[in-house]
Length: 221
Image (cartoon, rainbow, N blue to C red):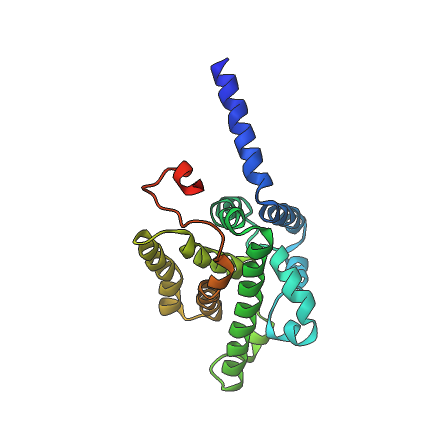
């Protein structure tokens, strides 16, 4: 009986956690549906289909609003389960803390601005001859810029001095690939991190910073 009660309490806790982050889990559901759809496409059709929804230079110049929205509804690579973990650990935490509207504002700012800045930089590189002209049609879809922005804004959720260790880890995760590979996507991720950090005005009034030494009851107080 105790095990059954514990299982039910666990289910209720999970349900409450999901209800507290509706935007996160609706987005995950959309990604699940689109990922299943991708697995039913032939490789050739899939590439052309995703290219039309990609935030590359060519599509941004023709359908900017459409591709900025649709590019965030698909996962490059077709692996959905890792995003369940990432969304639960980062997006859901941020949505619980900031509320859906502010969380969504961080996501949109990171996704849109990092895309425009990275693709604008790539366009300059193409025009200067530092990148091939084929780069204007590169495949660029996914949710990683929004995720990077949310990962960064969670810096303000953590009290000092743990905040600085977390910040250092964020810059290591997103800065090392840029230093090693120097791709426009790596650059976009770092830009998204900076945009997330720049969202500090949105976190004001969202509660006390989390301190590992304090109990949940102390945080609520």
